[in-house]
Length: 436
Image (cartoon, rainbow, N blue to C red; front, side, top):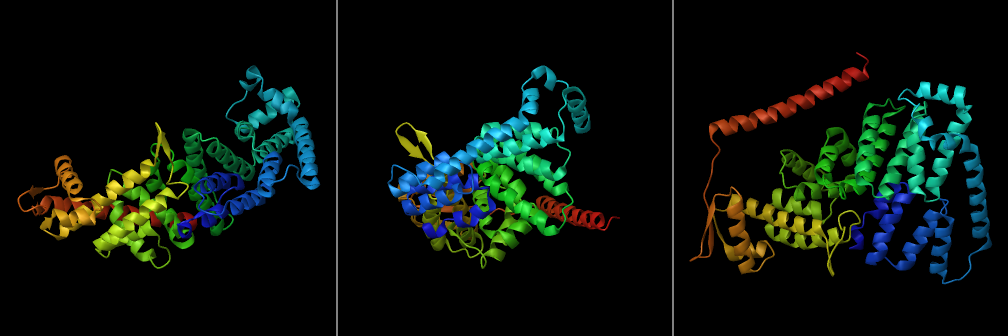
């Protein structure tokens, strides 16, 4: 399964600190040699201020009790720099720790700056020092302190570029603390900023969207509404275009979200077209599964891909989240994926055939005969599927249904409204770009 590990593709689009949870997951699974993981950690830590953690990793990697002198000197340098930044930001930090003083601040940044300067003798140098101190705290691994200071800094910052940088840092800190609700709020705030900002070049905006989508994976596969919201974000035209041209590996996560989402969305049909278009530039078992079922109608291949999909999910840092239940560990998304994947196969197969042997379906669904029969019975009971089982012949009989003229008209109208909306959006974007 190491061939399907997307970490080498994903890591370059993450902050260094966000790569550590991925390496921890891979190390736990032993998907790669332990020595390689430790070397990767050391390489990342060399570009951060987490010197104590780096020392611990060095000792584990080299089975040593001591560390090189340059690591000791580096630690002393970091401690000295931290004290210096703390002293520079001390007047503003003292002000922010005073609840009565903070109440004087407003949403108007210029008012706040004037207030700090006139009443507390705090100027731009101290505000800049707060940003540098917060950034240094983040590099040291103090994500809670960094998040607080970056939030307060943004209330005082008038530089849009610096404010955007602080927002990225705040988002990373909330992700690393696993504050998923707050992280989702920061993600939406950052998305709004990226979509509305006038970038110096279109590629800068594209790169920002690539980073945003990669960072969002932490949130969407941990937040209770994430599987719906990843579709809302990734399936937007401007984000889907970026995926297709610059980051096709993200199709794995969008495909998974479509499969496990209980509410089948109208966009799913269009997404299958994207899978078909991109199958020559990117494939993995999850995208190939959809191609087998909806493009090639190869149900034997789909059955084999289901087994591979299970392993991909179990070995993916975002999809393979484990939940402890008593003495057992389960992967909820794996179970939901397999259940819905069987449903996809069943529905598509039944759409083609009117009479199907239960034994044949059992084989297609990777179930034994009794389990397949029970699964089909429960599906017929709980869904609007117009079918019945002939227990004598062991056959599922499908009753053909045809949409009436009103349903056809409604379906065509839905498609027309979507196309009209897309056309209007494109015209609006073009006129705005031309300054009309």
